[in-house]
Length: 311
Length: 251
Image (cartoon, rainbow over the protein chains, first blue to last red):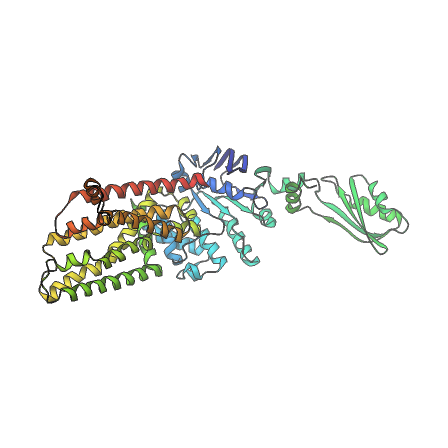
C-alpha cells in the first residue's frame, strides 16, 4: 500500500530524513516511532504530497506521490499533527465540505458524513462550531475528516497527542477497529499505544530507520530483554558474585537497603533464570522477600535504540 | 469543476463568517452614502454640467474608499491558511493548486460585487424618487459598472498575490495597499508633473484609473482599459499560482 525507496529530505542545510526505505502492506497497522524531530512528520508530509522529497521515491496504492499526486491523495486519509481546522465552521458543515472536496459523490455525502460522525462519536457536537470544541473533539473531527471518503490508507500524525487518558483509550480502540478495513500508518511517542495497536513498528531516529519489525520481535531481540530482580538478605555472602555464577546471567547490579540487598540481573535473551536463582538462595540460606521477572517493554527498546550514541 | 465550486462555496461563506466582512461592508456603505449625500446637496438647485453618477465616481471620497477596500478583502485569503495550518488538510485533499487560487480569487470577486450592490442601488433610488435621470444613458451606467468590475478584478488579483507571499495578514495588507496605491497614483503623475513630455503623459494616461473612469462613466466604451485590466488580472493570477506552487520548494 505504501512503498518508500531511498527517501531523503533536506531543509536548508539540514537533513530531516536520510535514505528511508520501507513498505507497508495492505491491512497492516504500522507504528512510526521516534523522538521529537526524528523526521516522522516530514515523512508523513511527503507521503501525503504536502511537500516533495529531495530525492528518492514514494508511492501510495501504486501512485507516485509526486508524479501522480492527485490519484495518490484520493487514496489517502491524512490527519496532520495538531489537526488544523476551519474554526468558524460547524462540525457537519465542515465534514460535508471535506467530503465534497475529496470527491464523494453528491448523493452519498450525507450518508458518509453520518457514518463517520457515528464512528467517531461526534453526534452530540454535530451542530457546534469547531472553535467551541475541546481538543479531544477536534481530534475526532480530524479523524472523521480523514475517513470520510473511505480511503484505503490512513496516515495519522500523532492522533493521541494532547488527549487525556480516557480519550487516548477511545482513540486507540477506534484505530484498532479501523485497522480491520484500512491500512494505517500512525506516528506517536506513546509506547504502550504502539504495543497494543500496531502490527509492525518502525523506529526512526535522526532521520534514519533504526529498526523495523513486529513489536514482539523487537522485544525479543533487544539486549536488555527482560531481567530478574531479587531482594534478599545474604548475610556475609557476596551475593553479586554468587549470582554471576548462575548460567545465563550477564551482569548484576546491587543496591543495598539496610541488611536487605536488591540485585538486578541482566540475562541472556530468552533465558529465564528464576529457578536457578531460587535454588542458589536455598543452598546459601538467603532470606528472600522478592524474586520477580521484569518484562522488557517497547520503552526499553526505544530508549536503547534512540540513545545508542549516549551509552 | 465541482471541486472548484465546492472551494468557491467555502470561500464565499467564510467571508460572511468573519467580522471583517461586516466591518468592510458598513465602512464602505457609510463612506459611499456620505459621498452620495454631499454630491447631491452640492448639485441641488444648481445648474451643473455633469450627472449625479459622474460626480459620484469622480470624487476624491470615492477613490479614497476604493483603494482601501482591496487589502481588507484579500489579506486573509492565503495568509490565514498558512498561519493556521489549514493549508495542510486543504492541499492533501485531491485538489489542484489552480483550483485553490481561482476559488480564492472568485470568492473575493463575489464579495466585492456584493459590496457594490447597495451603492449601485442609490442611483436607481435617486431616479425613482426625483424622476430625474441619474446618468446620461444606460451606457454610462453600464460603463461605470464595467470599469468597477475591471479595476476590481485587477486590484483583487494584486491582493491575492500579496496574500500568497506571506503568512502574516498585516504584511500582506501592507504589500497590497502600497502596490495598489502606487498603481493608482501612477495615473496621477500626469496631473502633478506639468513639465513632463506629452508622450510620457499620454502613456501614463493609459494607466490612469481616474481618466479611464472619467471616460467610461460618460458612457464612452473604451476597449483599451478592458484589455489592460483583463490581461493584468491574468498575469497576477498566474504569478499567484506560481508563488503558491513554490511553497513546496521553500519548505
